[in-house]
Length: 383
Image 1: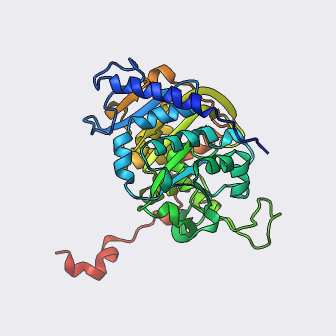
Image 2: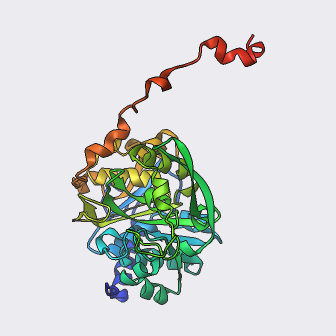
Image 3: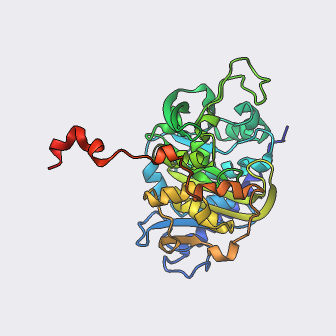
């Protein structure tokens, strides 16, 4: 079991107060990096598309707090009286590098407290490889929640809604149970994601954290068949039996499952065989934006990954779900170029990129009826 991270709260609050004072003195036309924050600082609309805050430093919590401050008024306005759902990425319940760090959650909680929204917040997850509350305990969330007075929620025990997803094995739809709490757009969803490479979709960031945290599993489910007899897990269903369907399902579910606020922690990113078996990258960066797609786009750039290889994000960009053109994204804080690290990709990257190639179609699929046959039933309507 991991010990909860001990927090020197006074030191943290003192440092973020100094950062906030510097930010308040900064002009909205400051040169990049002049005072740590640039551009509009409190939620004013941008004229260049989307805004993304990029912060770098030696304190994970402070990085996140300062990045969130760049959107303070907008976030407070958007939350209003809604329930705030903080969704960490706990793909594993016992591998800290793969999971959202308690310090990242604390940075978010401190920010919500500063804008008077802490009482509306909960931390909710459906862990992938084990009991959700086991992960909460291992990673120090339990003590953190007690300290801030927020509730911890296991999405596997909450209400669900059935949705239909694509399976490439037989081109048929499959039903899957997804969390109503994450699907309900009346809730304000914060994706507290990790910056990691992935074994199926190149990189996992803010969108994927929400979409693949939403499918639930039955109580007592264990991988390898050692759990409760009959217990099921709906997460594999949404993966769609292959790389093509996985990218498509992420895109197709994005309109209902995207976060309202992306918080991507890259203080210690993961490269190589992510999302659980990779190696640490000492990056000390974080990315925050109300435009989740712009945030994921910037994170991909910071990881030194060719954006054209990340299928689901390209699909979302083509559909206009957010901004993917770096020329139209205003960067607040640190220039991207200064902090790009070339993350080593998963060893199976060539297999993952099959989505970029045309699918093989059988000769029977190519057969088309003659035009007369095709339109005969409604020929009277064509003239």
